[in-house]
Length: 310
Image (cartoon, rainbow, N blue to C red; front, side, top):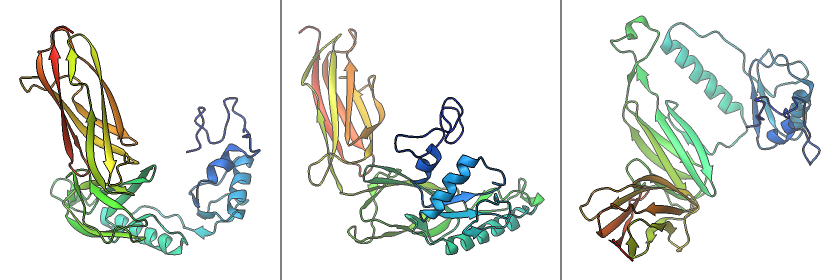
């Protein structure tokens, strides 16, 4: 965030710091979206960046730096630099220790947490929906290069408790099913998860539960023409889902063969429109459009008869 087309933070196309319509520099506007700014190895900074950081800090933002931080900025939390030990397990333990110490010093509520430091989390959002990427990074030395002590190449299983600071409903996008959690109306969602070696998951957290999939398509089509198919994913109130809902679309000709435009899609705001071109040499007869949403596994079918002439 905050990179212009020039590739430098806060620089306009002319290469000079620019001001927005609000009168703030681009650096300042970018920082307004954050609560914590981590500044490793920032010993020399442009004046415009220093002013933006100072304004950010005055406004309540937290600065995390090291002993090399530019003298014009005083870090709220200092994380001293260190050299990485040669031994991979020692280096890993040191990094986890420093991460835990930093976490305890930050007065900041993280939206997602794992009880195991071996599970790496990353959150993305669309509308009121969150997408939680979780990867099991627990490892040990193996027989390939592990005897050198430089790489821990073998994955290990792990157990963790995931906590998400919001109410909602959780779906496992790999197994296409709803996850059993604490009361979905609680301020915090809590659930346990077992990860296999090198395992990863994507969880989708929605404001309302997913209820059904609907398909709108013409009942008849003529070879050589186009048809428009609309697919919608709805919550329990009947509204389209406020999410990018993953869906699998399979368009089958009368022989059951998958036709063009079959595949995987993302239904933004719970809606997907596909323009299907019926080729002049496509098989006439009854075609099926099968749609399955990949969060809760709901599916729907629609049928259309393809003819040679109108």
